[in-house]
Picture 1 (spheres, one colour):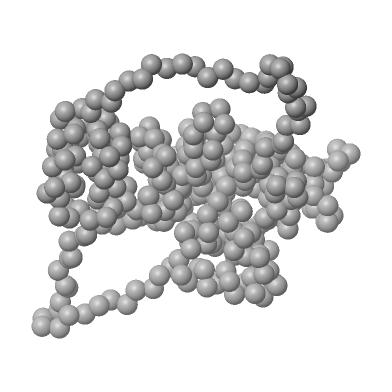
Picture 2 (cartoon, one colour):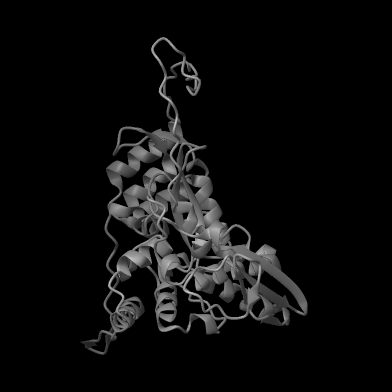
Length: 366
């Protein structure tokens, strides 16, 4: 497997000394599914993780997935990658350190506790075991099928978990083992295979109804909070108002962002929504709708030439759909979104190629 990482060029390139997302980068992230519910802390952590792991968020090697958290009463965003992303990081780390990396044979376990080196049953295994060997040291991990399987609203197994449960369980075990072997490099990011169960519906609570005149034992008292008048930060509000009136393009927003670097977290009344917001979040939205400055045409003498461009994502998607048609899979789009948390149209080459490998039966040999 190649240890080379895809690098994003131009204005989207992430610099090692970068401390905040640029307006251009933030706009692309939001187009990829990161909405206004994301917090500045989650965005800052995502930038640090992208720098530390070397995975490229703009080619979907790593991405933020938002899920509703009942305890926090908001959508919480978690960084995710695929098992291929874990493998890329592991191979790159051992290559840089001059170490070795290997695996012992994957094992699967049935409900009685008996282990097999190949899983031939049509039933799902109870567990899978993967041992990663880094520089001679063993890191074993066991993943239970019941802890990771993805289910629908009626408890039915869905997605790739219903079609290839042995492969999916083994990938979760491999992710656990790799995270044990590379704790610093893989901390804070989880694989899509591990997080599929996070979308399982919560079990319903069946309670008897409260009788007339009876206090509800399950009721949670609502705390009484004094009404507070919103007071925007004066300097931050000035930057927001000036940007709303004078910014004509993304270059203006980029300059404003640098000027207001120390005020990006200040509270303002957003000119577009007329609601309390942070200055940085407002500038991101404004930059996303303003036009780019067209680059000058590249010419050779007096003749302008355009280089032929082949979109690797479109090419990978075409191959995947051809494979799905060949194996008779008519639920490709639904299965892909259930497994990776996003539609094929928003996925990167890495996720699309991985699904293609799974369908052709070559993923296990990767």
